[in-house]
Image (spheres, helix red, strand yellow):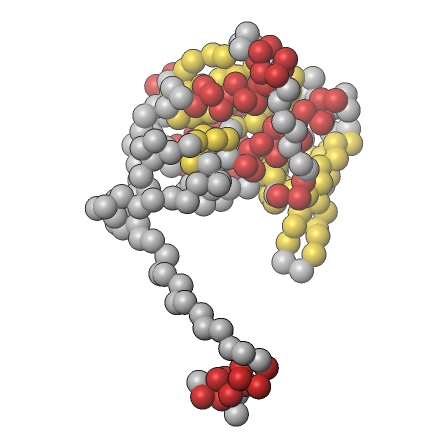
Length: 249
Ligand code: AMP
């Protein structure tokens, strides 16, 4: 079975985002960018399925600027086999990403598409669900365990208050949650090897997809600043303070 894994280049999760002066978005100038953390988990899961002999080939795909090549090379260094970059400098919304992925699925015929549950830049949590709808495929979102058994994949999902396991008929869509696995680091020899793995370059026009935005961002604002706290000497002083503030009687 072939696996398709979409990986997005996003602002690194360790970086504190700076809002542009005009409030139109996040300032990405000179900011460290990395693979979306949930997509690293998706790549890792695909590699584990290949190591188990369930998957035969892993194709990673990214939609974004030319620099997204670096993200794809990281996935290749982790263990993916080949990559597709759909180059665009536009900010591509989840619906357009899902339409492009649908075009790639038609060409590649994967048995499963494993996506992150959400991209940490737009926090949309939409692409996997939209792709499942466009393809008419089953979907298992927020996966914390993935087990392929013949023509079925059993996905354990993190739901409010517990775990739910669903059986999906293949081909299917899976989106990864944080506890699915711990992604590996690429070794230096594998980073070197990844440089010569195939990377195909495409454009949205190759798939006949119009990536023009359907949404307009009205305003992006910093979260409210937290008020400074105060120190009290002991528990009695704390209780007095809380009484003064009317928190306790
Ligand atoms: P979102 O719906 O934007 O929160 O993204 C969910 C998942 O869709 C991500 O974790 C990726 O697996 C995939 N995805 C979204 N945007 C892109 C993109 N531009 N290129 C590749 N994959 C993407």
